[in-house]
Length: 312
Image 1 (cartoon, rainbow, N blue to C red):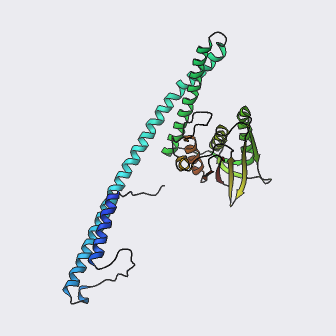
Image 2 (image 1 turned 120 degrees about the horizontal axis):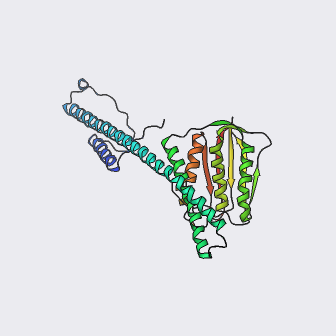
Image 3 (image 1 turned 45 degrees about the vertical axis):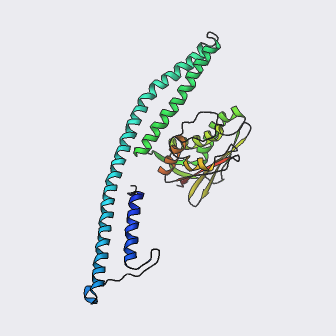
């Protein structure tokens, strides 16, 4: 369960700060200094001014404490309402995406049929229209699938079907699959794994999704004739998987938001239109496996995405 978070408005913080500064000033103290505060009973002094000052400060601190308590209750209620609204939003979006998946699949299939069976019958302009319909349907289908995955992860409805897996074998299978796509651009994917067998308890379908997303992005953002490196190693009880490319790299500003949903890179050198959900889904899947996802990149010098999974 996630820890409860309270968010204080900047104006409220300023009010609290001003009140505390005022209280210190009345006591002849300076903000930013360390003081030892001792309890002073009325019977310990004959000075009525000290007694009045003590009562005043205690009353002021009590008021501040009550204000903070009330603010925490209000913020907790507001956070709960926002969480509930976010859950409803994600469910509605998920339902809409689910209903769109089937008709988009039909459009994609029909456009593939038209491309094959009408070639030589329709003119080039008409064929271009059919190809546009096909490519658009593929993009929309990816978007819908991404929204469904993201909605499921955000709602906490994801169920991991875990099993013991040989990580080197799993990675090698996915490297071969992506090498077929990389061949179209004369890109070579190099895979390196240790001699020892590394096993992890994981959801094989979802971890394949993670690997294919990282390798697919590497191919998408790499120049023709370049190389991609996929490696597996063991570190401190974790399997460490990295995918490094020789692509355009990622700017510092993009690195701050790249794992957020619907965020795309500011450069336009990728070969395909991006949905902007892939890395957000990857991050959620890795964290659901009690792992971490990291990025190292520099514009013009490629990018390295790494994720860790607990070893079995």
